[in-house]
Every structure is written in structure tokens, then in C-alpha cells.
Length: 124
Image 1: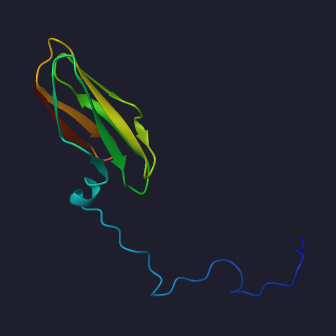
Image 2: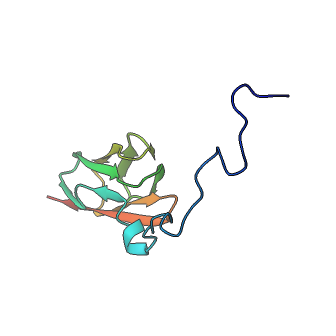
């Protein structure tokens, strides 16, 4: 089968060859860099019994990140508005306390890295 147009000679068409100066950029894969890809706007909230607080969570990673609530103190409800974040997206963690809630820590897990992000809960 003949393709319309002028004949292609060897070395023509397709992507240009990679030269020594055309290497892919180095990407920082250190733990410190990876653990800074998900950011929270606060790491501590102070609530009264029956109170509610919100924590904003942002994904600055170049790809998707999945979040999960790993742990919450007794009597504390923690819910993510969205658990799958695309690059540059944000979500909100809503923390609610009941009358029998205990202070402690809600931990958000970043599934891809295993990182645990602690949010300390204190009572007024």
C-alpha cells in the first residue's frame, strides 16, 4: 500500500533523535519532596463539644493522589468531601465532635506514598 505524498527516506519523519543535550529533566524523588505534594492549611483545630471544623487539603503533585481517613479519636467524625484529587485540586476535611468526643489526632493517609498527615484535635 502506498501512502500519498513524497516518499520518506530513512532518517526522515518520526520524532527527532535524542541528543546528549536532550535528556529528560531530573525529577526529585526524595521523601521530603514527595511528602510536600499534599498540603493542609492547618494541622490543629480547637473545638467545643458538638463543634465542626474544616481543613483544606491541596494536591500540588503532577498527578492524581488518593486520600483516606486512617484514624480518628473516639466520638469524632471525619469526612473528606473528595478522596481522589487530580493535580492542582483541593478538597475539604470536615471534622465534627460529639458531646462525648475525646481529643486526639485524625490522620489522613496519602495512598500513593503511604504518608500520614496528622490533624490534632483539641477541645476548648
